[in-house]
Amino acid sequence: MIRTPVAIVGLLLASASYAQDIDAVVNAEMKARKIPGLSLVITKGDKVIKRSVYGMNDLEQNTPINENHVFESGSIGKTFTATVILQLVEEGKLKLDDTLGVRYPNCPELWKPLTIRQLLTHMSGLADYATIPTLGLVDQWTYEEWLTKMPAQPFDFKTGQLFAYSNTNYLILGKIAEDILKVPITQAVQTRIFDKAGMKKSYISDQMLIIPHRAHGYLNTPQGHMNGLFIEPGYGDGTFINHPEDLVAFEKAFREGMFLKSAEVEAAQASAKTPGGRTTGYGFGWFVRNVNGIKAVSHGGNTAGFCASMMRIPSEQLTIVLMGNVHDVPGDGIALKIAEAFIPAMKYKAPAAKTDPNPERTAMLIGTLKTLSTGTLDPAQLDPEMIVRLSTARGKMGLPGLARFKDVAELAFLESSVDGPDSVLKYRGKIADRAQIFTFVVSKEGKVYSVSATPE
Image 1 (cartoon, rainbow, N blue to C red):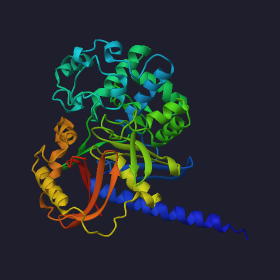
Image 2: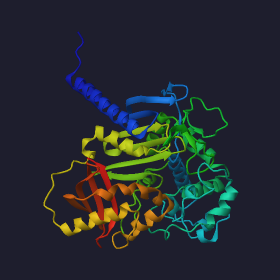
Image 3: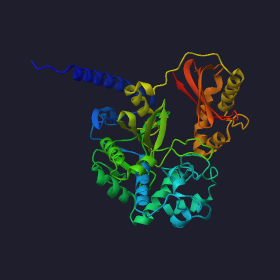
Image 4: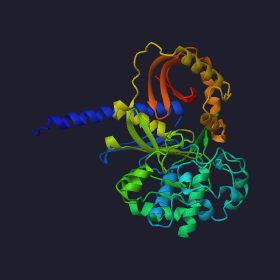
């Protein structure tokens, strides 16, 4: 008889339990978000501990997702572009504080003071071209047409003052890299990243090419699923098809210094800050989160048919890559829920309600929720930065979702903490009879900088 050590038995049982928990999370998210199919890879200590596929690839042919399928990765391409830009900085061909007036060919006059750093961190203030009629992601346009129309767009905010995600920043960064290297950004990513990391199942997202095992993408609509749309390839803000295992290989190679020195790796995955001391949650091509004291770095991606996330929890040596075939799902949100199944400390555990130390403040916050539910941005209630964020084209897209706050009548105080210049206040409340944890970030002036509600 062969005896298996008790420790190994325990590890196997724990892994089986985690696998069941993760399957439950993924299946619940797929049902709630109407995701036809999804492919998942999880590594711990750079060893694969879960490799699973779920659901359907082709709804017309009734064929399932399999482990060979490759998916459009959308804005994860920004991480590739940022890596190429940082390589050029290391090579002395570029500086983070170089201005577009020096580095960007045919630079519009108003854009000349902007810096490479401001583009990398989404602090330029440039409007997101994807929200502008005729320049949308699925519209047909040339770069020359883009360069004619974009300079006429007003800035979303004063450069360098705050963070607002904008595809425009990374399209420009890709063009700057092309000007220096004299090759398309897609070729630079191929030779400097994909070939170097052995990413043999990664491709330019070209509608005309035959790409082995290309997954089928879908749009979620009120009428049901519809076939996804194609986005013209070739720019630095996201233009690739990847296999989940290739993104795992990229994350490992990036972390281990295959592309950049350790100091640049660390800088890329450190959040930028506003002049007022607030962290933006974005570094150089990476989102940076602090989840109950645990750091997570990631980048999500969406196209007109696909969603994706590439996430790393450094303290746990945990990497999560998921790729799905529907357009409107925040991949990072699902990845965080999967991470919580492995790391219980990441999941917020709401304490019992306490005596409210400031009932007047709580009443003010309820009033702010009701005002936001109407789409009104009241400067007496909201921090100026929140008003700016919600006034951008991308921010306005989220305003209808705030209508759910209209029926919030009570908030039970849970706890407060300090984050830089702000106070973070947590409450328990209800939306449509479902318990929610409300998180408010409130400035020292007593105005709301951000608010979120998460089902408890």
